[in-house]
Length: 235
Ligand SMILES: Nc1ncnc2c1ncn2[C@@H]1O[C@H](COP(=O)(O)OP(=O)(O)OP(=O)(O)O)[C@@H](O)[C@H]1O
Ligand SMILES: [Mg+2]
Image (cartoon, rainbow, N blue to C red):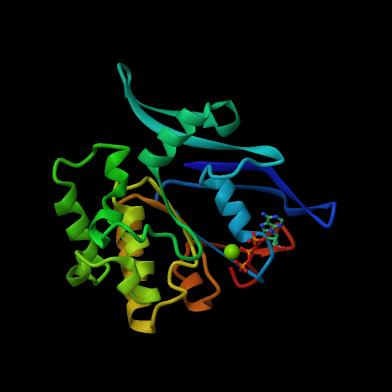
C-alpha cells in the first residue's frame, strides 16, 4: 500500500540543522492497522506529514502502491512521490488518502456539513455529497451538529468533524495523528470501533496515539525515538 524508503527530514533551529525523522523505512500493507507511539517531539507528525504528501523529505522517498484495472486485469503499480508533479500528488492524496491532522483543522466559516463534504470539491465521487456527509456525521456521533459552525463546537466535536472529513472519499489509506486526543473514553472507543470496521473492509490505517490501549488495536506497533522508528517492545 505505502512504503517509506530511508526517509529523512531535517529542520533548522538556531541556524543548525537537526533530523526530526532520521532514516525511517517501513511498509504498510492493504488492510493493515499500524500504530505508532512515542514521546512528544520524537518526529511522529513530521513522518505522517511526509507520508500524506504534505511535506517533502530532505532525502529518501515514499512509494504508493496503487491498484488499477488494466486490459489484463487488476495490476499493482508503485509510484514514487519524488517522481510525481504537485498536481499528481494532490490528485493521489485527495483520491486515496484520508489525513486526520494533529490539532484543529477545520474551516470556521463553513458549517460542519460543508467541512465534511469539502473533499467533494476536488473529487466528485459521490452523487449525493450531503447524504454521504450526513451518514459520516451519524457514524462519528454528531448528526445533530450538521448545520452548526465550528466556533460553537467543543474540541472533541471538532475532532470528530475532521475524522468524518478524512473518511469522506472512502480512502485506501487513513493517516490519523492522535485522532482521539480530545475525546472522552466512550467517544474514543466509538472512533476506534469505526476504524476497526473500515480496516475490516480493506482500508489501511496508520495511527499515532499516546494511548496504549488504543495502540493495541494495531496489527503492528512501532515506537518513534528521536526520529527513528523501532518495533514496539510489547509488539
Ligand atoms: N517546522 C519546523 N521547524 C523546525 N522544527 C520543527 C518544525 N516542526 C517540528 N519541529 C521539531 O521537530 C521535532 C519533531 O516534531 P513533531 O511534530 O514531528 O513531533 P511529534 O512526535 O509529532 O510530537 P507530539 O507528540 O508532541 O505531537 C520537534 O523537536 C519539533 O520541535
Ligand atoms: Mg505530533
